[in-house]
Image 1: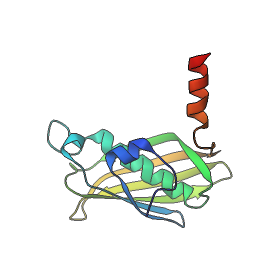
Image 2: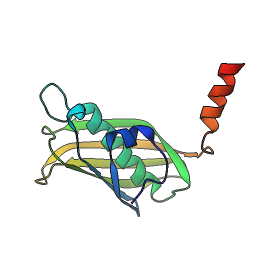
Image 3: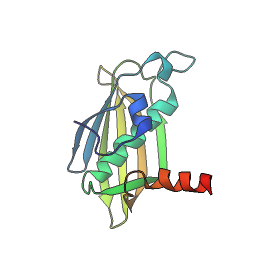
Image 4: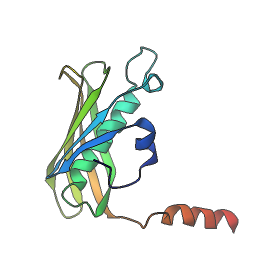
Length: 141
């Protein structure tokens, strides 16, 4: 399954979308050496990005034509994350403009590594390239 939008940072990390429907999302992540911290486990920033993306996709799964932006996120780390990881996101509640979500990361043995809650604001999607084109216009003026 492909992501419905182009997210360069997600592509750089190598996330693989596995589920995107009915208020739920799942993403697989096979961390590489460059995703580790000085303890040789997955860096917290990579884990938080995974949680952010899986929760945003859970929110968007009920209205894929809309974009969403993170308003706030709280993350708790339970154990060091190593090896292939599975993230699961769930939409808990939504209003016309906001989504309230939770996400979890599990290791290959099914142990919970991290959990987050997040609030997202639904926003209209811009046509692809609009922001980049606007920036390029500003640079040349």
